[in-house]
Structure formats: structure tokens, C-alpha cells
Length: 98
Image (cartoon, rainbow, N blue to C red):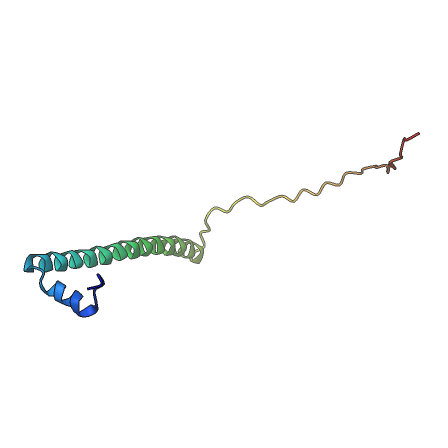
């Protein structure tokens, strides 16, 4: 025997495992699946709550605009256009070598 196991030998080895090991493996697999599903459900639930909150704020602003009441607007941004007159002088670099 060369120490390697083919597929048939592997299945025979699995068939020899006691029922307790099989039950533990099945329960572990079911537990893993349940945790995975609950994890995705929690992520989807948080996303749904955030989406509903955003839509509620948008609906509130829409209803306020619909009935003539505007939410307080931000003060307008002032555009300050200031021109400064500048004088500049071009200085040429000279080589001071003797």
C-alpha cells in the first residue's frame, strides 16, 4: 500500500464512523446554516431600517413643501470677489563667477 487513499476507501472509512459522529456533524451543519441565515437577516434588517429612515426624512420635507411650509434653509453663501493689484519684478539670475 502506498499510503494514499482513493475515493472508495474514503467513503468506506466514512461509513464506519459511529452514528454519534454523524449526528454531531449534521447538527453542526444545521447550526452553521441557521447562523448564516440569521447573519444575513440582521444585515438586511439594518439596511431596511436605514432605508426607511431616509425615506421618512425625505417624505417629511416633501409634505412640508407641499403644504407651503418650508424647512429652514441655510443662509445663502456670499461670493466674495476681491481683486488685489500686485506688482512683480522679474529678476534674472546672474553667474557671479570671476
